[in-house]
Picture 1 (cartoon, helix red, strand yellow):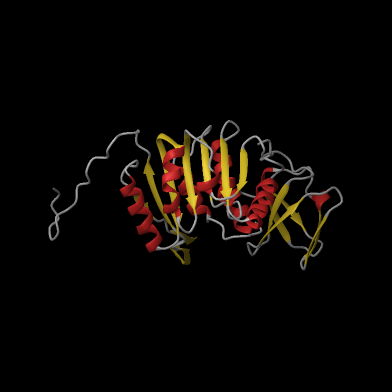
Picture 2: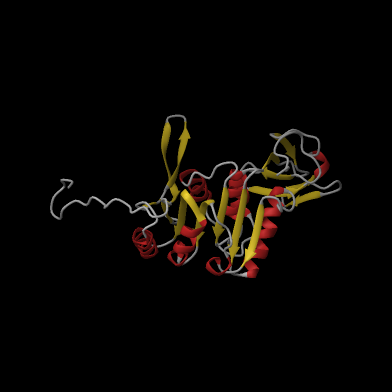
Amino acid sequence: MGFRRHGPFQVGDQVQLTDPKNKRHTITLKQDGVFHTHKGAIPHSDLIGQPEGSVVRSSGGTQYLAFRHLLQDYTLAMPRGAAVIYPKDASMIVGMADVFPGARVIEAGVGSGALTCFLLRAVGPEGHVTSYERRQEFADVASKNVEKFYGGPMDDNWRLVVGDLVASIDEVDVDRVILDMLAPWECVDAAAKALTPGGVICCYVATTTQMSKTVEVIRDHGCFTEPHAWETLVRDWHVEGLAVRPDHRMIGHTGFLVTARRMADGVTPPPRRRRPKGTTEEL
């Protein structure tokens, strides 16, 4: 977790260059490196030693703004073995599942490692993430992406297991279980056995049928509180003087999130209160 996030640029830093049209390029600084583009070349030496937020000019005269990239930018641009969880969903998982510094987290369905990067940052140096991935090729891509972002292996904070969660899980008293897979309901019982009382299960699914099945299985399991299902939509706004309007494009549906809390052993959840059919009054 010692990856530098501030101070002057140094050899080995990953730098994001943004041109006047907001096109972004990520480079890793090398002592004799050169970034080539159709708008000219930029020697890495022009960046080394400069503070973040500097402007460099290519040999063709184009100016580029230089920053270390944000995690959201990195995850959208990273090489993919499987589809990545969008930053809007990853941040909701971290926030709504209350992934805290020092937490012990299980993640199943590592994909390309985008959510893993968010989870590792959230748990901090005292926490730990165990990721389960069935497919070796996805695990290999995720491992490279995580290590590239954090500047090296994360052996003290991260364990990547190639295998099925139900068959391979060996943790108990974990704080959070995050399931990103086609059939998370198959892992609900294993998650219940691993979670400490008060822990959170969070499932990420793409379709309404998956969401419905996940909710019903968690609801019927008996060890969890009433599941909560929702999605988030993100819309940018154009602001130019008095011309203020929503952007024509937005990040709409990407997936549904379902969360619930692990109850104490032997506790029966209170019966749900339902509205009677044909009325808005509560029982």
